Length: 273
Image 1 (cartoon, rainbow, N blue to C red):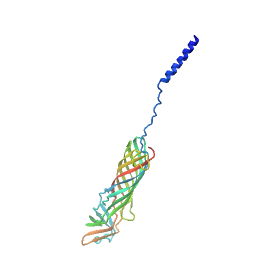
Image 2 (cartoon, rainbow, N blue to C red):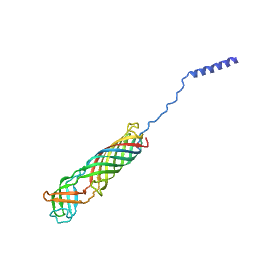
Image 3 (tube, rainbow, N blue to C red):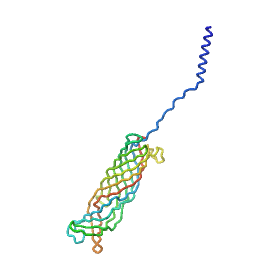
Image 4 (cartoon, rainbow, N blue to C red):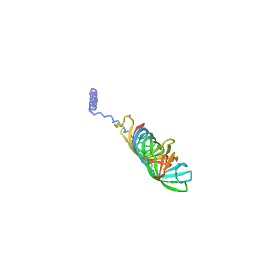
């Protein structure tokens, strides 16, 4: 009887082992890999190009030294005002560097700082305009031939504040501006700028990602730029009595240089994904 019980126990154990061997094995749980959330945080550099045009509406004002105009005025200081407009318009292009910080990855507030330097192809030719000349007491109308004017460069240092919807960023921007008036010596000007734009971050494997950056971004923005009033005097002015045309050989407008720029840009972002 004892042998029978021993044999039965052994048989039961073997049967259980065989049954367990036939059961399917439990698969390992899948490994969860989170999809990285895009953030605008990081440094960047890039290039831009666009078009600029005059945004001013004020008249030009010149101070003429005594004896520079042959007319009936007896005062030493003469002031000439014209309806001339600088007509600064043409191609702009350059580069920018900056840094953004996003408070919450994905969608959220973004703040940053950007600096850019621009080449400009602004200019116009010598032209005839209407004007008036006064010594503070008497005023007379005059036709004025103003010299051509051009602007060779400008740049800005701006803060940026915006809101990101994942890879799309809407932002406003403003800050310090500088540039030249294009009229010769002592022509460096400073002022301010303001504007806004929209920027889109392309996938990391974009065909434009030559530098293997964490993102390539495309932007379109508009800026208003206002450079300071210089108020320099003319170097030479001659009035032709026969035609009544006053010719200015060199002059610096006393009003601000105001222009707007619309441009597109390409940035390479480095840092966080």
